[in-house]
Amino acid sequence: MAQTRKYSSPKDPRKRYPKLRSDLRKRVFASQDVCGICGREVDKTLPPGTPLSPELDEIIPVSRGGSPYDIENLQLVHRGCNQRKGAKMPGDNIGAVENPLPVSKNW
Image (cartoon, rainbow, N blue to C red; front, side, top):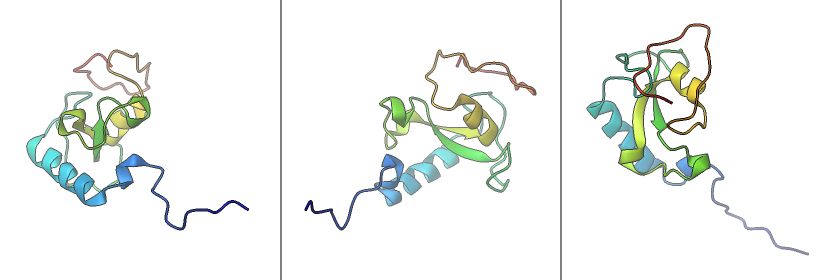
């Protein structure tokens, strides 16, 4: 009979070092004010879950080899922009949306 590990590491690499991730989030929120995808200002006072609320995004997605702990790979974005981008890389086409936002980068 195979033994299972009692304590396994989280499957999501962002949760492996929660303190480090929290510190990086604070640094990005303090140093950036505009969305890295659409270029519009981000209101950091909005509650989580709304389309214009602030989120932390990996420029190169973790699923495609990006690091969740590299400050150069993190940017401040709107939740809606982040959902639209998904796991796409810079240069990939995001596609049409019903309420398009002005785009500052070619995603």
